Structure formats: C-alpha cells, structure tokens
Length: 260
Image 1 (tube, helix red, strand yellow):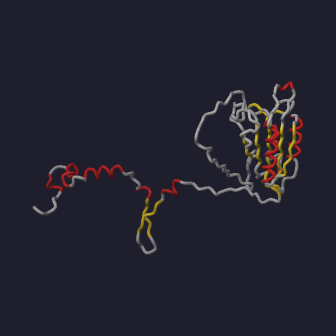
Image 2: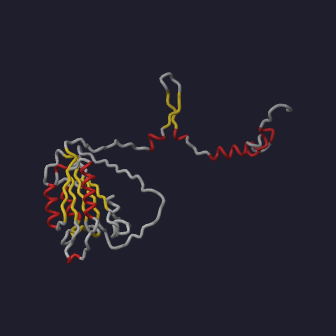
C-alpha cells in the first residue's frame, strides 16, 4: 500500500470520524463548508434550446415585489397657487404673545415659492372665520390648469389646532376643504400644507449631534386614473412633533429654523 493513497476503509471505523487523519486541514474545511448557508433553493435547472441544462437564480424574483414608479404630472400650464397666512398679533383673550420674526419668515417664503413658479398670496392677521372663508374660496376655484396647491400657516397652535387672531380652530377644518369630494379640480394632485406652529405644551430640550438630517424621500402609489381616497395626495409638514410647543431651539432669534 506504500506510495498509494489510502482508502478510507483501511483507517477503520466510521470514515467520516477519521477524515482528519487523511488531511490535517480537512476538519477545518468541513466546518467551513457546514457554516456556509444552504442556497440550493435559490437555483433551479432550466433547459436551453440546445438541450443543455443550466442553473437559474430565482431568489430575487421570488423575494421582491416591484411596483411601478409613480410621479405626479407637473407639466400643467401653472404650478399652482400658494396661500400664506401670517398671524403675528393676537387678541388679548387668547393669551397668545406677539410672534416676532414671523414677518421675515413670510417674506422669505413668499420669495421662495414665487421662485418655484407658484402664484403666491400673503394674508396677515386673519381671524378663524376669515381663514376658513379665504381657503374655502380657494378650494372652490378651478385648479384644472394647475399642477398642485400649497398653503402655509404661520401662527400659534396646539395639538391639532391652529390659532386665528381671535381663537383656535381645528386644522382639519382647513385641510378638509381640499378633499377629493370637495375640490374636484385638485383630485390626484399634490396638496401641500406647511404649518409653522406649536403642537402642545411640552418643552423640547433637544439633543446635540454631529450628524446631519436624514435624506428622506416621499413615495406615493396614488394614481388619479383609479379610484383613490378623498384625502389622498396630501402632504402635511409640521415644525414640531406632537406635544411640543416651540418650533425650534434657536434661542429666540427672529428667524424660525423650520422655515429656513
């Protein structure tokens, strides 16, 4: 047997038990192989036209569901209307202070949205009744030639509420005016609401970080060619999370960080 490779049977007992005697690295190799995940289910044999067989990877097609990409049509004749309600001064009975710095915010937002192609209108110091009336008028306008609609509310607020100069009113009262069953010409089009206001009474102390803000992306599967919910295509951007009163920790500077 000298000079010839040994047969496993000559080592006696269970061949697999003595595999390390043949090759010192065999046991380590066996552990390495056992540790590799079994991906056999990923592959299936498939015959070619010439009769040969080949392996085909089915893992991706079986584990991923790919949805068609949806994009809003933004090629209408007009970008759309943008209404800015800037409430700075409030009646004494509301207990709300003057919102110093809000005029600068309104001015910067006016320039920003006008540069984007919006038709921008600013209304200062509006009561609840006036806010609802002017937005109801806007919802009844014909937006057929517009790509979207935007509304910016600069005021005091509470959770789910926005202040007019005389009292607070539900934000839902304003946004519901643009639902699909009430504003037909904006069905399937973006309706953007930016709300610079407090949302409660808990103070947000903040936390220091050296990382930048996440690059979030908004995706939607809304499709105007099919039946969609009456409250579809709304985007709500708040300056604070629920329960937090102060829009930002900016040491009471005149500019609000949300608007910047």
